[in-house]
Length: 342
Image (cartoon, rainbow, N blue to C red):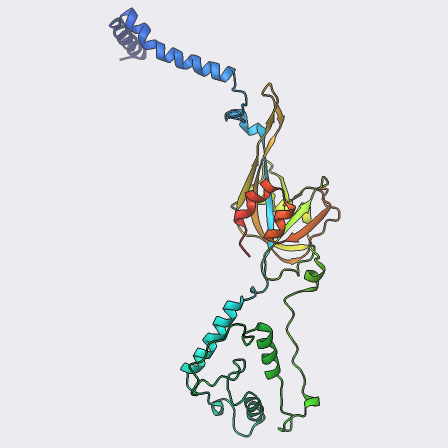
């Protein structure tokens, strides 16, 4: 059958089907479609205005123009040392050491130190000063004696104090024997260099621009705009960039290139939405913002605000609790869940 022949058959079938429907039924069947089309036309022509119960207009195809998409970096400095132990934890670990002394075999120093050597003499001198106890920091506790069961600390005891244990270990590390294999006099004993203090000079002076502060906490970089508002570095996302690329570029524009940083991933860890503002006639007064934050790590270097292209005035390295006093409340609540407790 030719094309005109097929078209004639289809048209004839449609005319025949339409003829089987009376005029009244045809009008009733078309009403729902007409009502739906009319309602859609009215809703499109008259957009709902913001009200108290619904402060934002319904989402339409033009909503994209009402928001600016931005991407930023939450740059962090990881903790450099472990946190300080609580008094209960100190007492618990001290008890575990004493319990271990009760359960193990007596220490045989001849297995480790050859007889009549300098190291053997050094160990015997310190062993005698400890009251013939092999353990260095456990006090006068005889694990194999009659009172071995009494291995728990009393309330208020300072035996498990970290400062005391550190001083004892440093004193025990001093070499008590001369090169000739004889006991060294007190004026010839060289003290062992003490480890660095947990509290740095930046902590004492409360210098929030330095990275060597709050060593047992995570620090976060925030920058101050010209209007005095504190925030994380962020920038508008162009059409030819991904979110993580814009986040890295924003960090470079804000803090300079004198840092060795690493972007943890390409997926945002937090976001904040600032809704647009509308006039009474529903026209757009101010565009909103949708800001996506990526997590970054700093390995070395420092922030340099000289010649920055974002007009920033200052920067701080702050802990989670300190951020709460600097950032806007809504801003802080939007990002707080991505921050660890320490």
